[in-house]
Length: 209
Ligand code: S3P
Image (cartoon, rainbow, N blue to C red; front, side, top):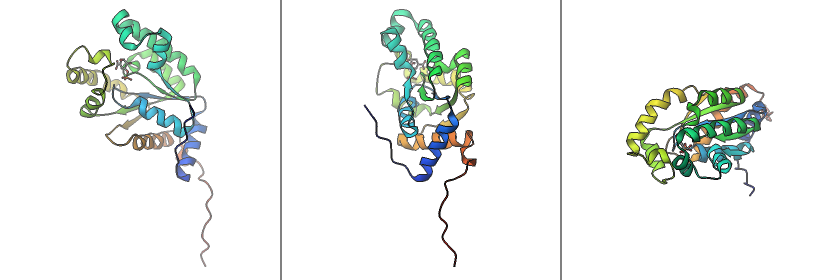
């Protein structure tokens, strides 16, 4: 299926073209907790940038021929984490692209190093209430099935947020339309990549009489 590119202002188009150009073969890697919006924002961001979108969890499921729920139930978390590390290392060779990773992926030091070497990481940071609201919509996440989701999420936030904070960029994932977050991500990327300093498109100046 071909997605139609979103319509943007001239300035936005210029900014997106500059991001694409500055990116080279690097991947834009979205990290953050379950419910942070990595897949939804990632898909739209890829569409805006006319890049391919890859969801690491989907790729892990394809490689295993099982859902993540099944992998956890049949082989355990350690096995899943090992597969996750390998699959992400492989995917990172395929840039430029937008890559959404599962919430635990960035906790692995090898994966963090690989992301640093091949990509630009963006932590989509959301507060507890937003995360819980979003994850309550589906029940496919094994980590949330083992206890009270609020307690699990609070524990994960305490463990993971200091590590997520190592990301190249941090963008707040508020309860606003996804395109607003994608716009904030594009602005953060442009600033990081120095696109703001690039020459702006020439504009016709009005003649002053
Ligand atoms: C996990 C997050 C999930 C998935 C798996 C484990 C985690 O991905 O990888 O259930 O450890 O936080 P999402 O963050 O896309 O839900």
